Image (cartoon, rainbow over all chains, first blue to last red):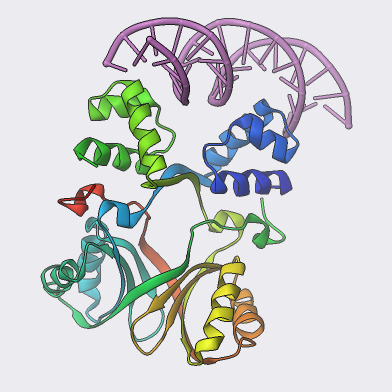
Length: 156
Length: 156
DNA sequence: CATGAAAATCAATGCGA
DNA sequence: TCGCATTGATTTTCATG
């Protein structure tokens, strides 16, 4: 993981359709050297996969919501986690510090869809003490691009 | 936007390196028909871009945190938004309902990096009344894959 | 959707630090 | 030995009809 890797990672996050030649031009490398590095970065798990970024509204998922969830019984947590993993509306589920144990990020069609999720999916799960729902009015910024140069001095 | 589009979108989110032939096999289409549809989906903005999904820990960004921010002075909001957009640690910034006006999603190296962000980046901004920081202990689920079939009956 | 020319991928090989 | 460049066969893309 050197500066050249970081350039490759940055470029490929911005535009995953770049050719090896284009990446190479940015990184000062031949196309085959880019190929070699990409193979390694994939094998190491640094690059998890290539993926398409979709406009949620374009496929009818115009509502973004976050739900804080307090779960108290430890034996309920396993089932809760499995349910979240299996629910496509749940994009993210993080285990947190603080009085709420989990934060969910949801993409939904509308408020009726949200209500259905809260009432029919979440509430029936045992051990849920309390929830707090936050609805996004707009998104100032939403990316998953990680600035490889932020990592500073790095490992391996 | 029909069922075939939805299959294409689902497949391409799972694996953006699929060839037109592979997508076509899943969707019952010839490679050139897949090409035609992809061109349209890109032109319509349904597919925003192709991108690489990176392991945050692999590039030294092992800490995930969320920060709820209460901003009161309306004229401060513009500057606040611009600052968030310009800060690479901030992956997301959503305008919310509720007593906190914004939710930030951050990727950071460690708690020292978080402290630096809170003290030197966030606090100096005017109009910030209150913040509440949530640290992720682990992530049960984290994806940005939208289930195209969730959209149900759809438009255009 | 079929076709085919142009482009990209990717493995093999050789070279140089 | 490790990483890069060159080469060329194969595969993929993508405009045309």
